[in-house]
Structures are given as C-alpha cells and as structure tokens.
Image (cartoon, rainbow, N blue to C red; front, side, top):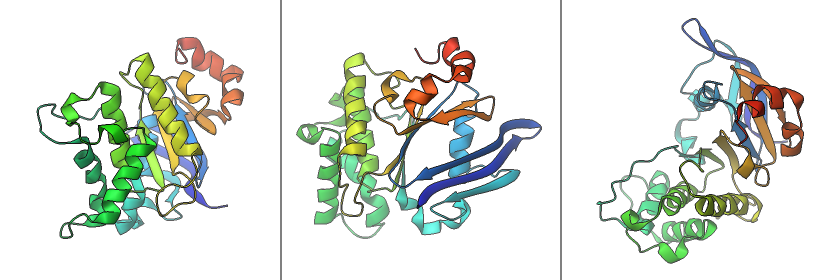
Length: 253
C-alpha cells in the first residue's frame, strides 16, 4: 500500500512543554481523514510536523515516502486551505482569477497560464459547484462561497494531499451543508484532474464531528498531545474514552 503520510512514535516539544507524545499514524493514498480534538490538543502541531515546519525530538516523519525536508520541488503535491483567509472585499478580482492563483506552482514565474491551466481552474470550480460564479468579483461572495472558492484554488494545483483547516468555521447551516457536499464530492466523485484516478488524500482539521460523519473514512482524536482514538466515524463516536474526554465536554456539538 502507498502511504501519503507516515508518522512513527513522534514526539514534539516546545522547550520543556510536550506538544505531541509518541504519535504514530499512517494515511493511505486517496484516504480522507478528520483530525479533531479540543483547543491545545496538538492538532496544529501535528499538521506543522507533517509539513516539516516543526522537527520532532523523537520518531520519524515521512511525506510521500521522504522526510518533509527532502521534498524540495515536490511541495506542489500539497495544497493547504487555512482556517481564516483574509481577502480584501474591495480588491477587484474575479473568482476565476483567484482560483487561477492555485496554478502558479505549475506555471512558474515566467510562463503565462495556458489552456491546461484554465481547464484545471474550471475543473476545480465545478468540483465545488462554483462554475456559475467564476466571473463574479470575490468581494461579492458570501462567506461560504468564498470558502469554497479558496478550496477550488487549492484544487487547481491538482494536489495529491489537501489540508483543510476548519473549513466549516463561521459558515451558516446552509453554507455548511454546501461545503460538506463539496468535500464529499471531492472524495467520492471519481477522477480528479489529469493526474489522479481518484480524489486527493484529505486531512480535515475540525473541532466538531457532526459534518464529518459522512465525508471522511477515518477520524483521529487528539487530546493533550496524545492520540486518544482513531477509527471509522462510527467507531470513534461510540468510543467511551472519546465520549468522556472530548464529546462530553461539548466538542461534538
């Protein structure tokens, strides 16, 4: 089996504070995984460790079979949608052009975007049901539409690994439902772009479980820097340790 991510007995410390302790995790090609846990549980540290932004004091990390520090030009295989993306609503740029920015890793600094790049943009927009809004100024979008446009920008790069940091944060119930459907379509919708026979592997960082139950293969629960539980959504929500340490504190509401 090909693994996108491999962590073996990883421990991360900030000075004398242990942020992650003896965490082991593997993620297969095309898999969708939710990473949940209360604030301070180690979710952000785990993502930074996977991306090579934090070096563990013990254990090994491999991304696409290599230490993250050795990926060099292969970073275009990874796309990241941050938790809060600041877009100036007054800036006169179309949704299409925002999504086209996701192609810059392939285009480079010299070549102008070509037909294949524009086709990748349209594919990404259709994946998140935003094709009819391609010509709309980004500042005229709702919060949920803007978030989906940013997901499309990440998808335009045709990544093999997509990281979504709290994609449902601040969205209305209707927008949350549309975002969940878009993410589910990415994972289940078959051929993705020109490069992959399936959707990208996805990590969704979230506090809440409700929207994750039908869109991920596996849920990983962190608590106080340790891996508390992992399994299918059904296995996790019925795990007594999770109920006591996380869900019972309101994390699943």
